[in-house]
View (tube, rainbow, N blue to C red):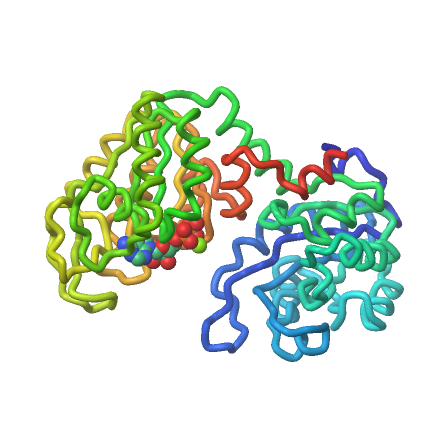
Length: 403
Ligand code: ADP
Ligand code: MG
C-alpha cells in the first residue's frame, strides 16, 4: 500500500475519500454530536493542502433513502453541516458542492486553486454508490474519476464496503492510502500478528449474531474472551439459565454452544458475567436490582453487568498486554446502567500494553465518561471495518489501495 508521501500531489486534483459519517442530533437540527471522525480526517487533508494539492473530498453520511439523487437529496442528511465544521477545524473555508457528479460539483472542482479544499455532497445520494451491480458502480466511478488526477483512500470506516467511491474509483486512478488508513491498519496488524500476551478481548453491544464471525476467528488469536452487554444473555441462555426479557437471540443459542466448545478446545478462557443489573423494563429510570447471572427473574431485563462481574472483568484485564474492546457492557446511554461499561473503560486506561477500542458506541461511551482519548492506545474510527479485519475477511477498500 502506497502512502501519500509516495505520490506527487502539488497542483494536482486529489480525490480524497474520507469517513465523515458523524452522528447528528436526533432532533433533525443538524447539530453534530461527536466530531471524532472529522478530527481524525484532518491530518491528511492538511498535508495534501499544504503540499499544494487541489483537494476534492468525497464522503457519506447516514443511510439516505429514495430511488434517485433528487429524492435522496430532498430527504437528507446533507454533508453541508460537515463542510462547515470541517472548515472551522481546518481554519479555512471548505467549498461545498450540492451534488456529487452534477453541475455544482463540476463548477466547484474547476474553481479550486492550489491548496484549496472542497467537499462534494453525500456520495450515498447517488444510489449507484452502494449498488450491487458492478456496471452501475463503475459508471459512477468513471464520472468521479473525471474530477481528479489521483485518488487517496482515507475513509477507514468504509473500507469494508465494496462501494464506488471506496473500491471502483481507486482502480481507475493512481492511488495511495491516507494517514488514517495507514495508522488503523498498522494497529490491526499488531492485534493479529504476534500480539503481546496475555491477549484479552472484551465484547459487548447488542447483537451476538453480528459478532459470531469475529468470535470464531478470535478463538485462534486471543487468550481470554470477556463477554458482556446484550450479547451475554445468549451465552447465559446457552448455559441453560433463565434470562427473563433480556436481549436474547434464541436462534443463535446453538452457535453459541459451539463457540463455548471451540473455546475449550483452543484453550481460550471465556469469561461471562456472574451478576446482572436486572431492571423492571427498558427505561432510564426503571427500578433495578442486582441478581446472580443464573437467577435472573423471569419478569426482569438485564441492562448492565453487575459489580461482581465488573471486578471479575477488571481482574482478567489487569495483567493483559494486549486488549481489544468492542461493544458496551450495558445500556450505557442510561446513566443508571453505565457502571459496567465505565469499569471496563477505566480498567483499559490502566493496562500496561496495547489497548484498542473499536466501535462507534464504545468510543462514544469512552468520551461520555470524560476519559482522555490519549489514555487508550488507539480508538478506531471504524467499528465494522475493524471487526471484519479481525474476522479475517478481505476488505475491498484495502484490496483496491493495495493493487
Ligand atoms: P459498537 O458501536 O461499539 O460496536 P454495538 O453497536 O454493537 O457497539 O452495541 C451498542 C449498543 O448495545 C448500545 O446502544 C447499548 O445500549 C446496547 N446494549 C448494551 N448492553 C445491552 C443490553 N444489556 N440490552 C440491550 N442493549 C444493550
Ligand atoms: Mg454501534
